[in-house]
Image (cartoon, rainbow, N blue to C red):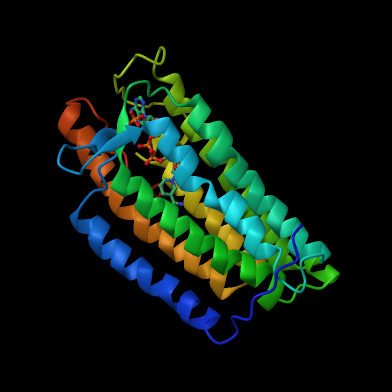
Length: 258
Ligand code: NDP
């Protein structure tokens, strides 16, 4: 690992606070305008690039920027920070390198402005998470047997599996890369809610917030809700408008609740 150092004591709290503030702005914006990608893609958002390529590039900072910022921390060789970094990398190894390869989206595009916003967010969030893990947080080895770590890691693991399974199931609804159809998902948690992939992603980052017990983790969890909850509402309305037989009792995002 490279051994650069940064002295950001004066501005780290401001950037962390900025991530909380960005959640409010994101919720406000996403509640009014559904990000134009996937089923909600629209003309008028400027040039587009391949969906797969966009996902790889826009999410990639969570791998490379995370390691870069992490490597600048004084506790970068600490046992617990390294374990937390590895868990983060498991999620993003899937999101950056595996998930895009499994999508069935040949010929589809995403507006570059959407990918650029996600890319910028991932740099910001990687900075906030990484600097906390390897520099500002304090994690003795005993943290690994604490109830917070065990509960958080369990939620993180369950959330990851639920998210991976939900995305995989959605992919399985299309016959091949050229199939552009949408079908009503009917298995697993889809029986109860429209967006189990978003729900499990939120559980995952709740687990992250608990196992890191940090303002950085909390900020990312809140941001995830701010980003995904309005989109889940849009997805639910989209299904209701496209399919007359869409199950009316199905909730949007949280089983039996919402
Ligand atoms: P979607 O559920 O909209 O789409 C996931 C994939 O499944 C896409 O390839 C989509 O194709 C396909 N698909 C969706 N519904 C159907 C259907 N009914 N029939 C056939 N194929 C379908 O998820 P997103 O694209 O919004 O998000 C992808 C992942 O990224 C999720 O796991 C989500 O949790 C995560 N994410 C996390 C964020 C965060 O803030 N942490 C932010 C955004 C996403 P198509 O593209 O053609 O619609």
